[in-house]
Image: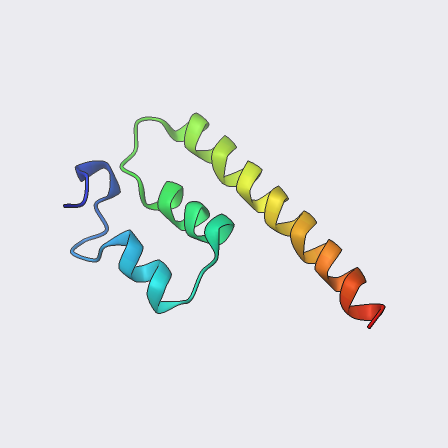
Length: 68
């Protein structure tokens, strides 16, 4: 059962993440973006944190890929 704070108009956030094959960081970005309003500052801070983590991961992966 999806908590009301993640109301996406009938779509479940987990299903959206699966549909787009999102990893943990990207899935959490979607999750916090879809939350009902009321904790906007905290949710935006979490979105930024997960985006920075994903950016770091992608940059590290890019370096590994260049060395192959």
